[in-house]
Every structure is written in structure tokens, then in C-alpha cells.
Image (cartoon, rainbow, N blue to C red; front, side, top):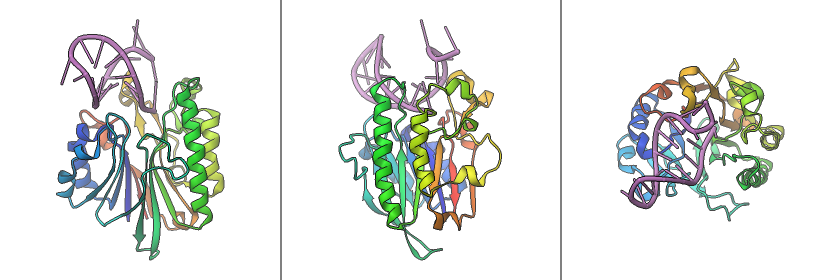
Length: 260
DNA sequence: ATGCCGGGTGGAACCCGA
């Protein structure tokens, strides 16, 4: 079963790219972030033509996450149950049967707050979001529920995960407090699948528009798939597909693919 | 040149992203 996460940076600006990519890629489930649209304006019909049902947690202008799935999903939550007062659309949780294990697993799609600049309430919100997310996830983990967490984490886990650690030493994505909260998940038992399954240290998933990031190869590894041990054991492959980043009028993120 | 681009809103100039 193939899962792909992709921050599309506006679903309506990127619909042609998404359709082109799905036709080539044919994942079973897509985890999309940064839709920048409400559910009513999400292009469900065009997605339906490709054989996928859309499950949308939308928001006007910013944020927004969605699942696209060939098989029906059971949506469980559209916000973090331990953080229901969060008014941003950054979370979507579903249940799906993984045939390989013949059991239900959870899929969690996140668009974690960026948090810049670090000396503002935006960063406080990021850390609060991560703490409340971790609290909920650890509860699921302790119930032995197999979990796949995918999305735009806005976390550069280590210095090797950015083209220039020096340029990002004061960035919310590389801040020690951010990395500490990310490590809570790793220390619990989640596997950072891109780090573990793809060799090398330039596994970028994002290249900024400003300053010619893509052209210069100045990337970041901030889109992740984390898995619980039972799922980590049976992973077939993890890939980053850089092609969509090279297309004209591209998203600044590129798809990350997890095959189980 | 992170004042750089490219999306959003609202109807110009400004907000946001990472």
C-alpha cells in the first residue's frame, strides 16, 4: 500500500500538477497540506475522475489538509482531540484497513505551524501545538494502535537536514525547542522513515522560492513520515520524488512516498 | 537580497510561508 504526503501550496493553484502526478504515481492515499481553500472550493470532481474520494479539512486563505483515497476512509478527527480550541485546519485523522496486517491502522495528516519569527507568539503557538499533538499521539501509541503520521512538520530534525545550518540557527524549524518536541516522538518509538530508509544527507523535501532555492539546490528536509515499530518492520520503500518541484509554477514542496 | 518568490485577500498593498 502506497502513501504520499505533499504540501501543494494551494490546491487550486496546483490542481494540474496534482492530477499529472497522481496519474504517474498512483498512491493509494494522498496526504495533502496547505490547501488554502474551504471544502466547498476543493476540486473534488476532478479528483473523483482519477478514482479518489476526497476528505477535506479546509480553511479560507491559509492552512487546510486533506486525504485523497482510492478506498473509503473512516475520518475520526479534524482537530487534535487534546487541542480542540485550535482554530487552524492543520490536522486530519483517519482509520484504514492495512491488508498486509489485516488490521486497522491510523493515518494522521498534519500541517504543523511554521512558528517564525521565534521571538513572537507564533513560535509559542508552534511549541504548544507540538506538545498537545505529542500528548495525543503518545496516548494512541500506548494503546498499541499502528500509526502513520505524515505531513509538513516544519521541523528540520538535525543540522544535516538543511543546506546551511548557519542560515537556520535562528529559525523556528531548527530551534532546539522544536527539535526537542520532535524527538519526543522518536524517543517514544516512532521511526523517521526518510532518514532511516534513504541514504545520504541531502534528502530535501522543500526548496524555497526566494533566492533561487531550487536552482541552487538549497533545500530543507521538513516533510516526514513517522511510523510505529510494527509498521516500520514491514516498510517496502521510502522515496522522495523531486520531479514535481522542477515543473513550471511548482509547489515549494515535493512529494514523499511511503510504501508498506 | 528571507525587502529577492509566489500564494492568498480584495480590489492596492499587504499578509503569510520557511
